[in-house]
Amino acid sequence: MKMEPKANCPLNKFKPCKQLDCAWFIKIAGHNPNTGADTEEWGCSIAWLPVLLIENSQQQRGTGAAVESFRNEMVKTNLETANAIVQSVSSHKNLLGRN
Image (cartoon, rainbow, N blue to C red; front, side, top):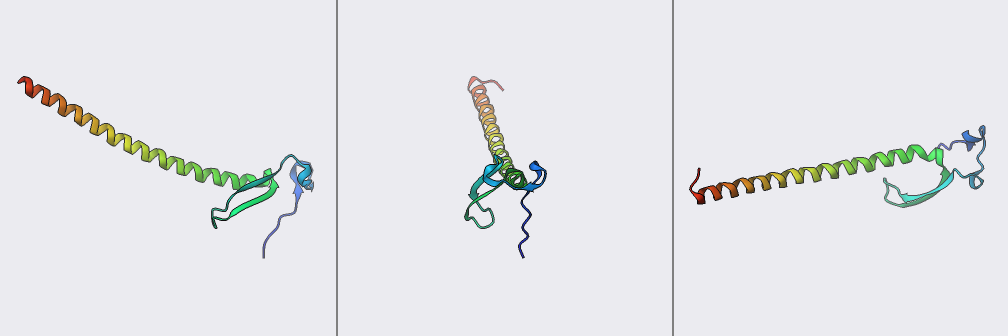
């Protein structure tokens, strides 16, 4: 059994939804994250908010992971660069006969 909410508009004193006569009635197109299938649906912006907030959170987690990975690579590269500089200075001191 599929539950279908009534199309009562909270912005219009719970009267029936005006659908295409309402500026808040929009089309969402994209990919279903569960099936990977393309999807294209019309609906109320207010009703879409929970879905869009969940999608936004998923995207932010992906961005956070990418930033953390980039940070780790930068730390590694900076350590390698610092070690190379220390070795270069040590080699230069040895050539000059200093300890």
